[in-house]
Amino acid sequence: MPLDIAQLRAETPGCEAVIHFNNAGAALMPKPVLDTVIGHLQLEGRIGGYEAAAAAADQLEQTYHAIAQLIGADPDEIALTESATRAWDLAFYSLAFRPGDRILTSVSEYASNVISFLQIARRTGAQVEVIPNDESGQLSLPALREMIDERVKLIAISHIPTNSGLIQPAAEIGKLAREAGILYLLDACQSVGQIPVNVREIGCDFLSATSRKYLRGPRGVGFLYVRRERIATIEPIFLDLHAATWIAHDRYDIRPDARRFEQWESDVAARLGLGAAAAYALRVGIEEGSARLRALANQLREGLQTLPGIQVHDLGRERGGIVTFTMEGFAPEAIKAYLAEQRINVTVASKASARFDMEARGLDAVVRASVHYYNTEEEIAVFLDTLDTLRRQGPDSQQALLARASRRK
Ligand SMILES: *Cc1c(COP(=O)(O)O)cnc(C)c1O
Image (tube, rainbow, N blue to C red; front, top):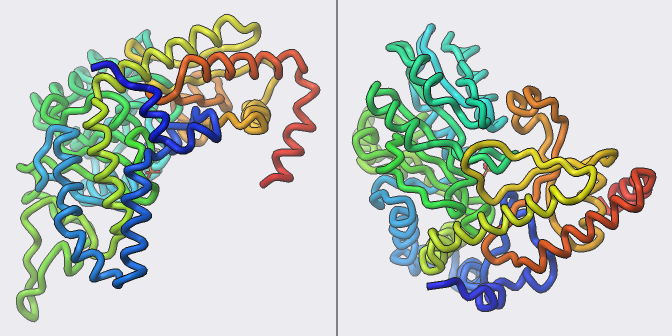
């Protein structure tokens, strides 16, 4: 069934207010998600937070089911967290590393993940190594195969990086990890909701993701998938009275399911909103939504390439909805500020968010325009026109723009 874009936009209040090309930051929530979150907060206000959670218990279970269905997992393999980063951390920091253990990661790895690698390397004597790219800019599978030995303890990569349209070959990496019996942690923060993601096909042991990006859920909630065979063998770094039960003065039992990685306190409204977002994504159709947003992104890349002075920076064989570019003579922050004045949302990806990659390519910062299926061809045309207007005003216009933007902050 083709997507009914008019209907999808009518269900997305933000479409009236802005041209939203910041879906990799936080996408616009559709009305069923907003209604779920707001409705639960109102229920908490009316009858009490614990009482509202009890009333919503069945609905909360649906969040686990919808996420599981979305990624091809079982509900008991899902833990809900406050963010994708925390989900990733719960997996990573629960692993025991010894001196000489090797952690393999990608050139395009996300800053928070690398910071954690460096911290654990410092603490334990494990070493972090970067798998080189192939000539297309994606992770080189032959290079990874070469690097694998019995000292490799973990392969941890980002499926889609924060700062480019690149899609990494997650399933091929998974095949190598499985063959070698190495733990595989996939940061799927940008891919869940953007492209089809199936944990059995990918073969990962852990997968972390968020609600607010391509899934279109609320902020402040994310999830961790843990492959069933791994759950019992990995003791979570944190335990509380939800993850475990205190059964005798000197003993506790840890839950048998992935919820051993959760904590008791949570934003119930956000968790319900995540469930509504996952159900919505399933209803829209991941394949259909993904095909459309990738076509829109390609259209945007092609349009950008026709404008003088613009360079598109996306790498790889497979490209998704994140489009990154620079414009000669203009600071990415100034471009963002100008677009914001025209109610067009983009963001800037800076060197510090993916330093291995940005440094290798000599990039300080790029404009990141990330599209979703509910964006339109007309919005892309307006975007390109607006950029062209800025370009014609010339680089001297930037100072005033940046000054206005800093006054708005
Ligand atoms: C945004 C992002 C994260 C962090 O997600 P949070 O929900 O902010 O913790 C992790 N990895 C990648 C690749 C991202 O783009």
